[in-house]
Length: 172
Ligand code: ADP
Image 1 (spheres, helix red, strand yellow):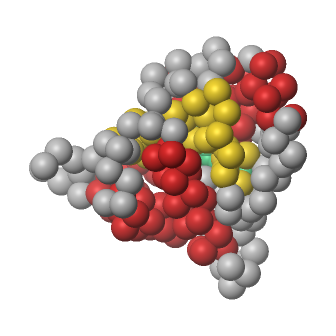
Image 2 (spheres, helix red, strand yellow):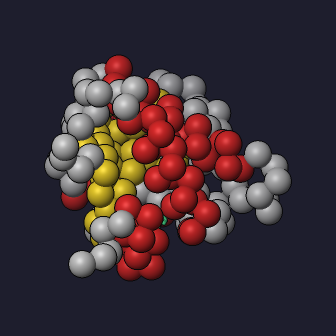
């Protein structure tokens, strides 16, 4: 069976997939980090569509078109801010990955890339976030057969190493 999960290092805005996931904030009206990069690359029409959505709760997700991005859709999800780990952060982060997969399946999205949600400004420790990301996607993929390929798009070399180890890709 073909491997459906893999990791790469790069800029998620360059990926020509059915959808890329955005690590957005509750307003869905843009921000820094990967959110800013996605809005810059997609152009102002993305913000216009996001304005119609009325925001998004932490752990939930919304879908829009991709506009000028090479990706057809953007799935916007809102990760938790890290507050030490005992404030429900792991469940909320897992929910981001699960809800994004649900939306992907509902919109016939076969190829999807995630950034390392919450690990920038929101301060989630990278190794803990990567473990939750890989475990959640692995556990849920069987349910969403139409989603044939999931890419973990790492911005940093360190994140790539974490994902490679978790996915057992780093070994010869
Ligand atoms: P959050 O607020 O959820 O922490 P950030 O955008 O600050 O979101 O960071 C999330 C992750 O996205 C970080 O690991 C950051 O390095 C990464 N990132 C930033 N820009 C890009 C990009 N263009 N493509 C992929 N990942 C990116």
